[in-house]
Picture 1 (cartoon, rainbow, N blue to C red):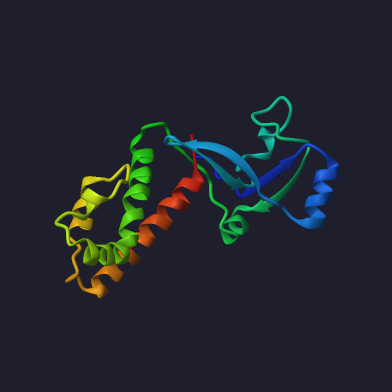
Picture 2: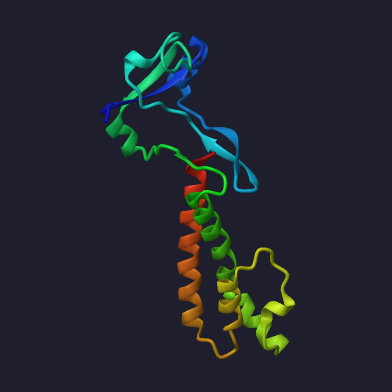
Amino acid sequence: MKNVNQILHQTKTIKILKSILKNGLYSSFALEKFSDKKLLIPMISFSNILFRDIGKSEVVDYGSYGIGITRETGIDFELNPVLYVYENSIIETAIKDNFNFSILPQTLEIIKDFYKRCKCDEITQHMNFNPLPEEVKKLINSISENTEDELILSVKELFEKVFENSYQQIRLAKP
């Protein structure tokens, strides 16, 4: 395995290089397709390649000018490589499911209030969410006016973390 200790951001013109040196790097938005959604993902592209592989007749040619930093500095600035995923792959499905499964459980306080007014057996009969995974449906239907607020808060906080983690994974995923 190659051990490359630098990462590079390349550009095509000296004008852009001067702007980077004066103003810093700015994210651009890339239109990415993740699962069945089109998303604008902010990114700044860096390459982790050997200098010998850069150039018009080489592996990559992203421009004649560039900014290089050590790999360790990139890690300090929390730069991350992208994760390439295939459509309907295990990784894409897992990220998508975690994201979708985590949205509704964050609303359990509202569901408990709705239950008090509704007095129904299954709250999900009065909700129209698609997708509504069976596991989430069971969780929502288990909420009643007797459900402890502390339990609802704990579940909400847990699923907020799952949502945030899934969101970060989506931001790093590329088809």
